[in-house]
Image (cartoon, one colour):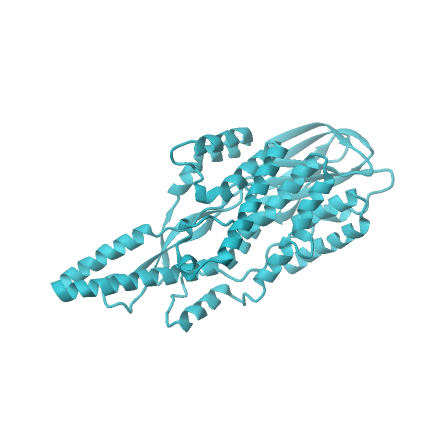
Length: 440
């Protein structure tokens, strides 16, 4: 029987100072904590985890309004992800089954997607709509990342875990089906990316491109009901129908922190080894842990106008867990093969010792070998820790002018945070987009 026997959160303790700053929306402090952590004898982000370093630093810089610094770091993360992919294509078999912690962290699919979203917002803040569109097109064009993601997950079968079980059976190995094995991936489009694409195209006056992207926005909801299990946001519909003489004020708000990987230790049976000591095996595999946000409603009050609630556009945490499933099935397969090979070598060595020195020495040899093998196994829990959990949108049609905004964050009917925005200029024939961030 496969079951979870422990979970190790100790590795996440190194991020304590950064986490505390982020929870308090003190993003400058978080950036400083990263810099100080990298200067220590044991850097928070080792050399082989450079992708996470640049992602985390780039995100906190975005939240802090350091748009240029954020763009540089997010682009470096993107370059490293592409480089790691190239290396993986040419890797040999030994490298394939090696523990992932011994290799450079290659980034996850969701990280490669969402870094472009936040870099697009960096360019928008810098009043560079064309630069923002370049970032979004890297996702949305026919050869872009979303299309590649769709092709990548085609043919994964009804259940990725079943596929891996089948592959193991082909080489004569059995697997306890109760071990975590991942599921097939059902995500191929991002409503968040498509929504921003519509806004940017409308700003450039490219109505036909905006129409196509709006159709894709609807398609994202239709094709991915396990992710988009909530109603299509009315405010997304409204961006295309702004009355003459009015200007549209759009709000996008990011809340909470995405789930993170932690190490789970699982046990299963290998009853076919000669030495019974090796019958109980240990697997160390990542599992996602939620970091639930307290925020359950966001209200925006515009000076002299009616207030309105923001609507959920994208459950980023759900996307993160969904896209990871494809890699998890592969990871499970590699881990199973690696542990079997280790235990087989231990079994052979223990048998040889037993032939010379008796059964007791064989048992002691197997115990020592198994203890050593299990000790060096560890789950790869590397990932970016500071992507938001959810993206909300809303908007209102206004007379052109300058307004004051108040954003109220609610938890169970009580206001737990408030943000004031003064002198928000709302103009016709341009994109008026206010981004709010509260990661509590």
